Image (cartoon, rainbow, N blue to C red; front, top):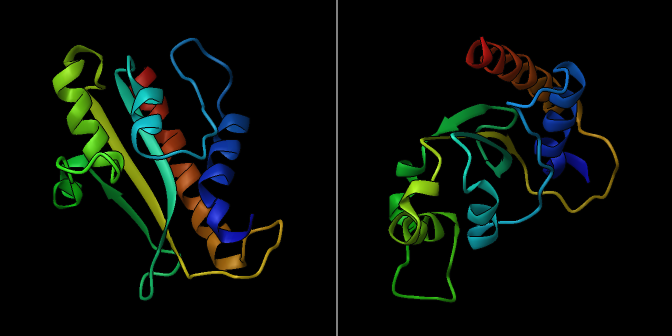
Length: 143
């Protein structure tokens, strides 16, 4: 999995730190576009955690709103259905099922061609930092 699996690592760490509750669900997914949007329909709040290839921000944590990806929307091409395109489509088709708040968290990684099970030390540190941050956020939302 290597550094590319940092999102799944953060999710697993959150699952260990936060006791099971009816108001919090963790989903380990490896999907995008329409499949990802279909997975988040019906939730009030969604945190998406993923890696992003970065040449200058290795290990850097960033937060985005879906609106920041508006320029990647390709409504005219059904073959280029990325997350933003699918989200815009579902906003028209099923507006009441779209989450009220979608936050996208990324950790910058370098392109990898080596396969390994664990994260590199820098990415592991960023994962721990993001896990702590999100655990606090989820605690505030629930309380």
